[in-house]
Image (tube, helix red, strand yellow):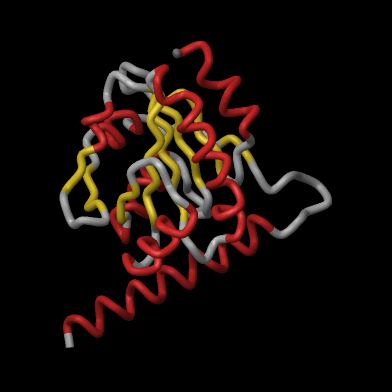
Length: 181
């Protein structure tokens, strides 16, 4: 019975995220779908102390990448804008890896779907399973709308530089991280 309750809760949360994503990514006449989100107090500490399981079920603390320019992307396989930007992230990781850039994807999705998609597209950066803790972390950082994709850029000292709700372009990422390389 406990499993059914947890599974139901996850299903409800994913449904809410899906509906929020539809709302956020439906074209609006007065504004764009993407926006810079204000960074909440304590957000840098929240991200530096977070840990998630990877696809091999090993705990991976985000703090292990301190000293690199960290790009954390919250995403899901059912999110079309998320899937659209991942090929750019793969290219970006390959291009800037030697300069100290590290992408990390935090999937708000089922492990089997994430594994299949990561393999299919050839993700060349760590993919972690966020579940409800990933949703909570994104909210604590500043994603109060709970939409996806949500990207956070952290400098080498562990301080959040910027956040982006909605897709983030290769050009914006490049402009954001260059001063920190």
